[in-house]
Length: 195
Image (cartoon, rainbow, N blue to C red; front, side, top):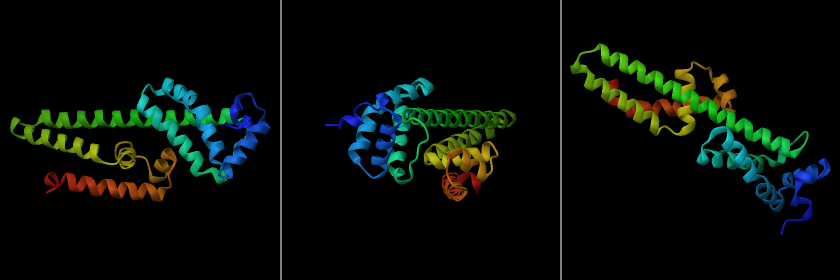
């Protein structure tokens, strides 16, 4: 059973929010589970209205709560808890939308470039170009999500490691690690075309 002080934070004063946050920061799983139960469905509805993808919505909201639990010891909120949660959910939705727009734009551009090269070559080379395009698409598909994001932001959009880190909320060193991993996988997957 949820203690009364956690039953409905929307009707509580900021002091109750502070108490709730303090308990979660102290590792109180009951308080955290009550927070999730109280806000998860509403946040999912809010995020879904932004992105229109049910699976991604679930993932983004779960990621938000996971982040809160993992960072609970230094978790601080200025203002109302409800405002913080909705703002954090909105920011994740916006990042998701930006990522998918960039990825779609890059893929469309890559497809157009490969298509223009294919069109300008003889029929004999068209088959090889199609194989390369398919190989590139498959290679990009098998990259882990974060590696693909880093690779596309770097190679397709020309962002620096610092800019990528800021966009994805990771350190520049982590960006380098993901880029190295992406390049190694792509070299392996495209080895036939690199020879």
